[in-house]
Length: 322
Ligand code: EAX
Image (tube, rainbow, N blue to C red):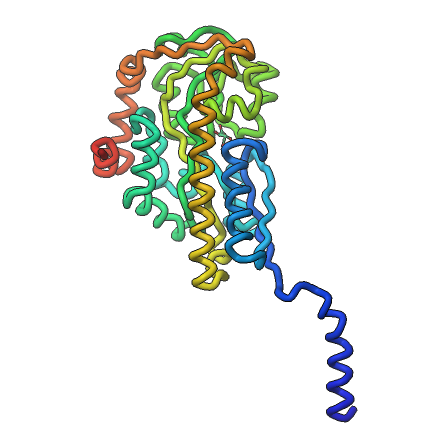
């Protein structure tokens, strides 16, 4: 074939491509726990639409639900999905330094928790992820956890004694419930509703946003606003996904993640404000006055253990944070 014929042939082959988009679109898959219309779903979809907008559609972000958070982190690690929006529940099993944020009664309120996570303390923990084959992008929020059960009103730590309570697959939380005299039963969130329906466990604990988003009031009678532990969320991505981004796109990626963080936190605040009324309307017996000091006193042996097993200096810095 002559050069001109070869060129003509090449042009003819290329012609149909002219109808295709002027640029290649890269697809990212992100998974989140809980329904799309929840604080977690809102975080993931806000990230997706923000990143698509900021990159003028060069990226397409597909958001999927998966209520098994450990499985999502594993999928990010092996690269079958790009990112996950997960509570820290199982994350300490991958990045042990995360466990410090799972300590009960560590944060006074959302301002304290968000402030610490956005400070250099939070950044230092995110910096531990790459050694475990993960990138910790940004802290988001699940919220302060409260107790529900089907047996009795919880007013004092003694009321918890002997209750089978589903916990996340989180050794800090399990230690706390053992210390309070309950029987912690760890399982993925995806197994929780059937376990409550079948009576495999008597109760569970979760932020109001999670209880409302999943109609947990349909399978639980008693709610106590213990706010016994703050539950962070974190956006975790596969290192290669992040490495493949150009420097400019990486800036946009982190900007989209911060938009997700803002939308997620605003939704948790709104859910917490409306939540108690929603739980009452749906027939739950609600206890809002809680003797927090009694729960903290009952946890004393566990606190002493965490001073030894976790980073005591960082625990102090978090408690002293203003
Ligand atoms: O991420 O497993 C849990 O109880 C989590 O709080 C829930 O799935 C939200």
